[in-house]
Length: 288
Image (cartoon, rainbow, N blue to C red):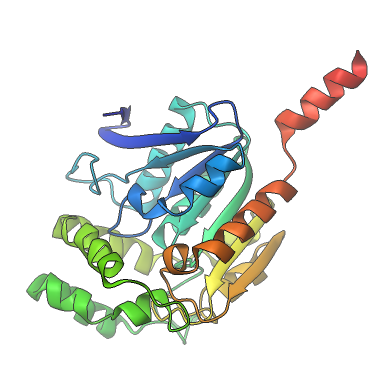
């Protein structure tokens, strides 16, 4: 199986599509793995793109590292994957917590390798309640969630029904919900707790205003995990060069339940992102 030694950790990855196509790097959600992108890979590959999906440290088939679950470290893991695989002029797609890693990557490492970003159902710009963010999650409620996770992870997962996760307008087979929960359940609880604290306590409001990379914010209006009006919409408002696409009736798991409109939005955005490599080839051809 393909692994990369990135920083202090062995990360599992897979590649699909045209090896010479424009790279699309896929950063998965909290507790899941690169498998969550299964319904995106065929359409992206058919479009001639080079798809790279990897498992975050502690998730899926990657090494269960003892540390490194803060967003800075995870962003450096993303940077390592892109550098080792030569992903230049890439479109980087992050879902939920993955969106936070994408933003932190840009603000720490810059956009020299990135042609565009997609922030899918993001945990941005700030989730936790504070004096500056009065509508956020109260700290006591966040601690109750952590206690529930520690007491019975299965019961905690069962609090969110398939209809809530995938969205009432996009019913899915029971097996897809079971598969999603199995990924969560197979992630070590210390990893889940560390990652949850990292994205919950982060505040990206200032960082987002510094990113001038073209961005697509993609979300369902029935997302109960990251409500649109608290996450996706203010995120799009803070980004200098962004487009917001809202899928009606879709929940947090819109990448699976609403895969057709989701993929259409991805491909439309990618086709509109200027490719430095293509432009350079055109300049060379004109010079001849």
